[in-house]
Length: 225
Image: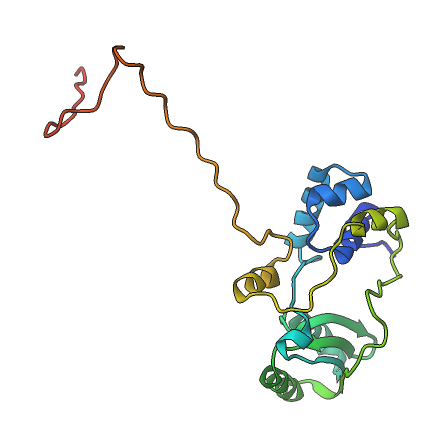
């Protein structure tokens, strides 16, 4: 079976999994690729919906609770329901298997949102059953990367990406920042600086040149018929 992502695309995705806020230049240096190549490939992956980088506050900082859901639905609706779950902001990951089974992670921002989502899921047509498991504690600290990549990232490249990475914060992001990185986590926290061209130089004193129109008079231009 042909892989959807080629070797370089897989490296870029794995680099973003290690540091989703890394710049294209940082990723390029770690992978040995030009920054323009990394940017072009990421934009293509994001445009076709293959990759999306988002930022989330720790669930314990905002009062949320992680859930693991196992959903059983009719096979003819499995892909549609999985796509709808993948597009929901509270869904962290989705996996489908044969026979109409969907397994996904859920992390809502509040108890009310969790209840609404679970109630809506229970009432979704073609869902014949589901089980929801509340995750009370994670016994393994740190990241647990997926090891199923056909082209795994070189350990030296991963070390270069994480060498200067700060410790993860346990505080919730400010609302104005959290909203932006929840939509696109790879964009900077601050607005882009707008560079305007400098104004035209003024003529030196005593030199001839057009000046501003006199007060109360209208500047007009004559044209030859």
